[in-house]
Length: 206
Image (cartoon, rainbow, N blue to C red; front, side, top):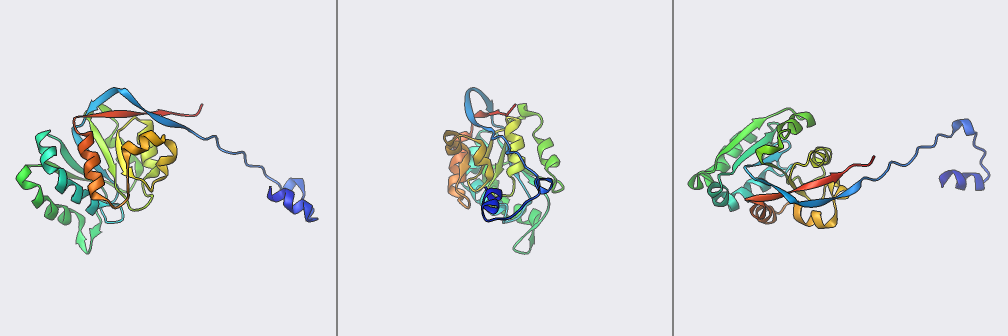
C-alpha cells in the first residue's frame, strides 16, 4: 500500500530495492477440550518475583484461597528469578506473606530459576503432575511462555493484557484470563479450577 502511494506521487523505486515480506499465517484459536481433565496438584506462579509480574497479586489471591488449597492438598510454587518487592528481597517477602497461610497449612516452595523461558517451560514438561501456571503480570511479560505452555496443553491462568488472548477463543478467554491487578478475580478463578481443570486444546497452523 505504501509503495503504491509513493508511485502515485511520482517517486521512482527500483525493483532491486523492494523486498516483499509475506504475511505470517494466523494460528487458529484454541477451544476448550472438556473431554479430558487433570487433577490440579500444584499452582505455579511464573515470572520474575516482583510487583510488575504480579507477585503481590498472587499472594493476595493465595490469602483468599489458602483453606481451599489445603483441603485439596494443592501446593503453591513460586517459579522465577529472585527480585525485590518495595526494597525487600522477594524470598523474604514471600516468607512474610506465608504467615497468612500457616493456619491453613498450605505447602509452598520457591524454585529460583534464571530469567529464561526454557527454565520455566521445562518445569511443566510432565503434564501428568497436575501443575497450573499462573501469570498475573501487570504487563504483557510472559506471552511467549504462555504460548508454549498452550502448545504443550498445560493449564494456565493469566492477566487479560497478554497477547496470548489472540491465540484462544473468547469462550476460553473467559475461563483462563483475569483482569490485570485483581486478586479477587484470580482467587475466584483458582477456586473454580480446583479439583478438575479442562485442558486447552491448541491447533497449530500446518
